[in-house]
Length: 267
Image (tube, helix red, strand yellow):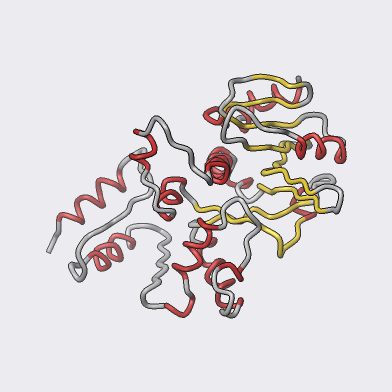
């Protein structure tokens, strides 16, 4: 027997600009059955069921990804008493499903960036900025309609947004090639939010949630790694500060796009 949900799922499937679909409703009305039947129409279908497999503590890990945004991911922050192995397995399942992305630390001393990572040092971002807000209990409607709002974690929100935008605009082969750089020393503790590779060039990216902000870490990276140019993504307009180019947050595609991105590298 066909249900209304079946028709709605087909409409979503045939939509050219479809996005993430969130299915909500009362319990025991056949949502899971319809989704599973619908999934058979695709070549690949992956189900991650946190209710039937509570031992993998999937939801706790997913929630912790949002809470730890912008910081090195630590399993102990999920549950200090829990064994790390099932938490690692849960995170790996989420990553394979495309629900989270790992951003590994790279020493970025040359290319390829992926050859200089530390496997135990990484950040994690959720696959969607809107879902990230929901996990933090922040409503997008309230944020957009408010004229006077100052979020204590707006820097992390901007970093998650930029990470997702970079992943969206990079080619399929490059989607895993997003890294960050962190320098720990007694004299200086510096971090660059993202480091990407474009051709034979390394592009360090600093994310700012406003129009102001120091760029000490970015300048330190340029000096130590002998990279000619860096990028700051902020609410400021297009501008150039010596060897640092500022792109507005809405124009990330201009940086990653083949033609406009090459203008940055060749200038």
